[in-house]
Image (tube, rainbow over all chains, first blue to last red; front, side, top):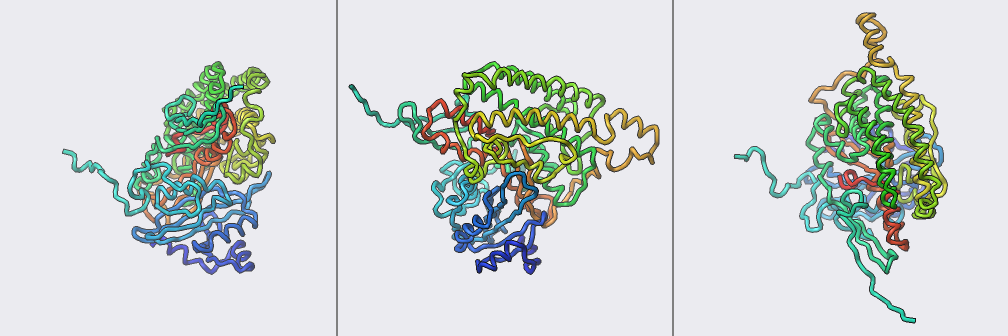
Length: 169
Length: 391
């Protein structure tokens, strides 16, 4: 499973994890990514209140939102990268948030109303992995045609009418 | 007085409208000449670049990436090699890093030039288009001499670049810098204080500082709204710290400010290139090679820092089970890749964070309440490339 490496270092707490713990906000530290950025896991139902807390903490810039398939048939993950933008800063604090949801009922509250840059990116995550972001103003396909069936970036997705080269006569 | 009240008109603008910069389609609701609503429709150039990446090795994937932002091609290659490099701790020799910086800045100039021309054409001034193509041609000649290709160069490699700079390239590039700086001043004399131009861009599409940050804007869009934020300074990648240059920024946040930021960045890029050409380790290729031959295998000129590539990775180069988010300051803004390795030659997830895609989100808000003709100005000043918006 792909998330085994994140479990190995759950004991180390980063700065934000300590801050959230002090304010009794539920989260689970998942260690750090390869650049030393803290990764936190948040439950989908807690996400909206914690997102507001993050904004209050100073993360004013949602630099990237994306989603991936953790394993074929497994969970789906929605990933958020935040940073603090100020004038002439030098390597400001960063944070990575992950929310894991089940494949059958992937529902996550939208953060569009806090960070507007989630608009297209959440739509793309919906388009590619079928995660529905609740309360998003226009949650519909963005890159694929409206009539498309299936979620292309899921690992168990089968391309329709795929032409196998080996079947070429 | 005869008052006529008509119903709003809904117009589909694009995907083949000449000022939609590719295949963007806007569904515009108009009340006379005023824009009431605007909805961008994307996906006409969607090729599934992220899905393709999931079953290609990095070297196999490199030729694809120049098709994201096909006007700032070096940046797409840079991010494609930077992400795996940093995930696997591969060192880049200093000479390679300098070559990369020179190429990136040339690419930035080329991209800003091909923003300037169409932007001016969008608001009715055709002449600068011919001027910028003349200068851009020279940059592409330089690319062709170094990489063999004008646009889709496939030049960056994990650990460095594909080949060293050819004989005489550094001199040619210096010549270009000397030629280009007066040309930028010429553009400025032609455009910046032109009253017709100012009437079209001043106070059009104003974005406040807080708003710009909240919408996730980056690059010149963010800097024109008064935020001094440039990833080259923030993240300290390549060797930008060793050179003397300033962040270009403006306070106003309108289309004029974005124009001024980009013009300023072109000059700044040339300054970076000139300094980098003078301080590149090993100097021009012919000197380096001659010194290597003269001093033999053990000479200091065979040192790691003077190579154009560190050890070439094998075709079965594996990405470890790690993940990270890496970004560069592309001409359009923050170009990032969120890479998850899977202890295999293929990445598990290769998420591209294209600057154009995210900068485009603010468009409906900017054009609402403006005139129809302002759509072109505002869209032009955002600077999108559909190749990277749709991927």
